[in-house]
Length: 205
Image 1 (cartoon, rainbow, N blue to C red):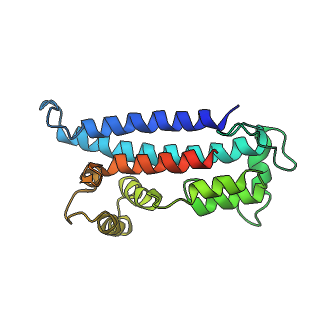
Image 2 (image 1 turned 180 degrees about the vertical axis):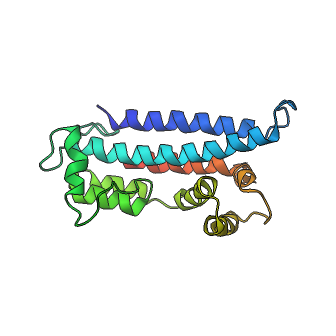
């Protein structure tokens, strides 16, 4: 098993999502497609990207803990202490918390790294160096995703932070924020995906 394969699956999925999202704003798009459908498509791309990142982070930790995978550099990761099978990883992790009954928020860098540290995986420092890279789009992506999933005053307030972080004009609908062009001439969504690719690649070295 190779961590590079995990990265390739993540990259393939997120490139697909980028192409789908950008196809919803191209001038060549058929006028017969309802704008509401396009809006829903853009929103789902964000939700799916957020989920893809969470799944990548979870699998990176779980595989590193039990599977003795090879890194992108060709080095084999040793199993975490006391773990031999996949179904032992999460139960072992949860046993390290005093009251926590549910898995950590894997998309959250701090929670993911805390889980990796609790499991004492041997490639922890490499994973930390990758997931801690800056700039990271995870917070802005989470804000936008949470608004689409939970429309309320609190999630709406966070949209202003995203607009400020991206130096965009105020008043844009959240589903159009992610399609705006930002330096170096790409959509916000594509820029986020590119940044996540870099973070993921360094985390599997």
